[in-house]
Image 1 (cartoon, rainbow, N blue to C red):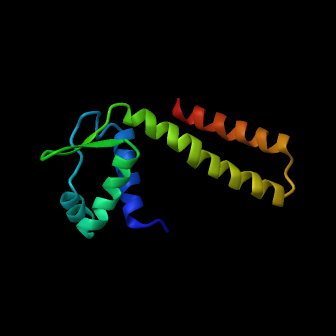
Image 2: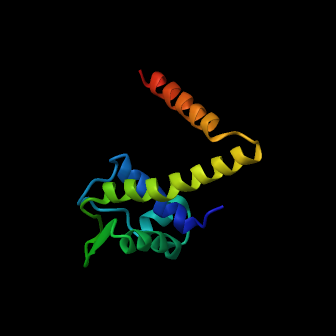
Length: 121
């Protein structure tokens, strides 16, 4: 399980990716998040600070926290380089345990990718 403050920051990132929060738009305050998720405001603040530290959000003194320019692109890049790499690592390790060859694994990936594309249509 991930700590709640990380879950909060990831939820806000997802809100940005889904365009529910747009560039320049005000982000929920720590007190709003605390009420929404029934958590301590300090925990919510830790989640918000992650976004500031990663330049996904910026503070306007006295006004609150706002979505930074290019936040969506930054999140996409971060998730592609970190999350996908971790998932691929787990898949490759499991494939090796099951004695699945690289070509078989790639064929399976192509098959699943095509099935998902077909479902979109």
